[in-house]
Amino acid sequence: MADWSTRYLAALDARDKRESRHKLYINAYSRLADRKSVAPPSSSPGAISFATDQPITDELTRLRQDLTTTQAARSSLATQLHTLQTTTTTLTTSNTTLTQQLTATHRQLASLERKLKDRDEELREKKKLVEEVQDEILALTVELNAVGREKEKLKGENGELVRRWMERMGREVDKANREGGWE
Image (cartoon, rainbow, N blue to C red; front, side, top):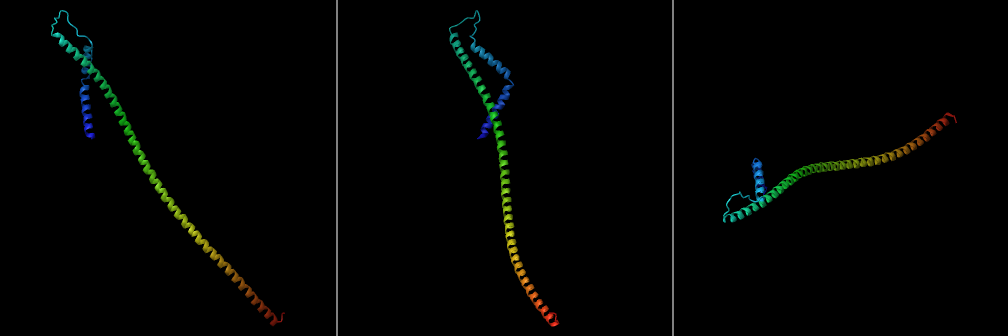
């Protein structure tokens, strides 16, 4: 759909370039035509007026008025065209700028989404590591408690063995003292 409008605008640009070479002549002719349409036809002194000149003069006057109206409309349309071309250029520039900003914003959004995804993955991994460390601490605590109970049990057993050994040695010493007469 844009193909026809592109071709049309290209044709208008080509016409404008072609006519711009003759702009001086076109403007001079337009001014002359405007002056002629406003100024009453001059009659040369000594000119003979025929009865048939009146319809031609009326027709000429009407044509000059039409020309004046057409020139005014052309001038108005030329001004509107220039305004619209300026507006089009401004909007095209604005559109290009906004498109570039949108593209940059999309890139930034994608970058931030990647960073967020990476951060979420990192947090999940850290959470797993914390859970593993807590499990290890719990296992070591249970093992430490078991070793502590075993130590207390062995300490009690050792104390019992030392007490029994001391009693036995005490009996042997008492026996040796009785046999040796030391008592």
